[in-house]
Image (cartoon, rainbow, N blue to C red; front, side):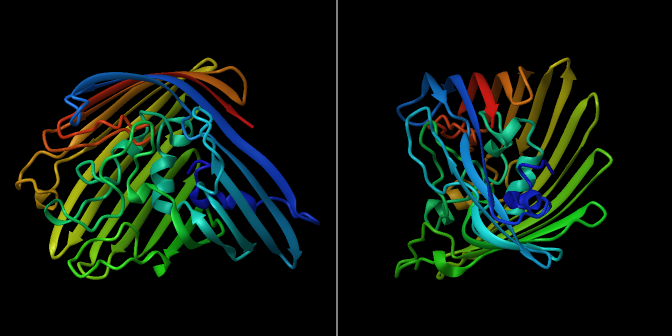
Length: 386
């Protein structure tokens, strides 16, 4: 998948030339845009409204390094933090941050990590950095719009809140970095590579005497296999998590994706199924998506479409069976490269919820998603890498 989005961003470190001592690289992305967002039939207090804002679109700064320890063994590290320069927010280890060892047998890291499921979804997003209001994370990994779900009949347990504040990241648990995780990244053989991540019980929180759910993950694992060659790429990932220790809510996600890139442009595709099992009630929802980019001189026309089909059993959220909780997200845009590191862009995105769904943008949420909400937005911005 894309070099900067491969799970944990470690493979590139592992393949760098040997160094006599630790060398530290400073890198990052500054991505700013002016957004106009319109919400129709939104949540209470935001039935029909328009907002404008400046967004930082997953901008970040990072520090990474590698030290040759001899005999083919290397020490690797990375500290990476989001930089919300649109509102002056401070620094922290909110993005992929880890320390580990690398050798010819692979790499082992521990910290705050992107798992292979998240990496696979981001790797086929048509947007640079898989960010912005048109990002596929508005649809994938969620269940009827919830991240993943708020328990049986609208109760708990839950991993993440079902709704999101305006201008925040609103991705599913499968598309959020795993805290307190450890992972193994294999070497690449004939284009194939594998990643396996484990989230231990450090995050465990008791359900409570009345089955009140935790807000943190109990335990989980995330595995994936990727292949790339001759312009093609493909991958499959499986992510499982258990929430709480009384109701023992379990959730998983299987994701298959791939694409092709040539001199003319690129095309990507994804299919996934999300499942939640709580107190013996199981719900499943499938999603699929297509994306394409066509080169036009120094620019690229981009477009993608992602759809969530109606789920199997809506009792989880207190909705009657057969309630329509699907949605679709369509995006079209143009990116013009001013240089190898700087580009300008204009993006239009349209998200339409069915009558019982409440999906929101995955990046720069509207904060007003309710059942049946329609959200559309326009972004004009500048992206610079360093």
